[in-house]
Length: 221
Image (cartoon, rainbow, N blue to C red; front, side):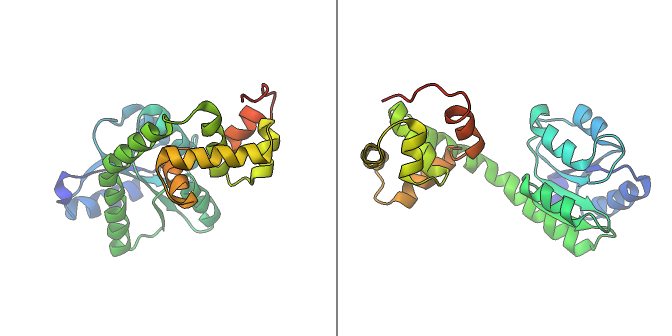
């Protein structure tokens, strides 16, 4: 039921906050309103599940900054970005950063409610995501350090030759570790091995570069 669901409205325009508040309460949601990102980050209750309607353009901290800061404040909520005309590129950036959707002002009521349904479905699935992540990490723990490194490189999309070069081993050795990984993870296809890696949070190219290309220590055998 919508009446058990909380929505945070973060927008510097009072008229927008007031309009959304009326629309959402009429639809049965509970609402908390915030005039800026700083107030939201400081005041929102992190332990209560919620969805966030987040304006892109606000004085001080803009929507993208607020979105980046949320996790550090324990606010692991799905975000729907609110945009004005001409903010589409920014909205796309927000979605690349994990936002569920973006809505252009003025809002279409049905479109807003559909976006909120999607956001709360994602919220409901977070427990399942945590269980899959924990299971995947348990599987990855079966690997040796070197096997995990090879799987990390594969999850980044690198060919054997690149992984071998970065780790200081031969391409043939990478193939051997790759086979070991599949055997230990008990998977029959490379795609299945990648699914386990991605569920465990592997596959960050920036992390790979930090570890192995920027002042890295010699690879372990």
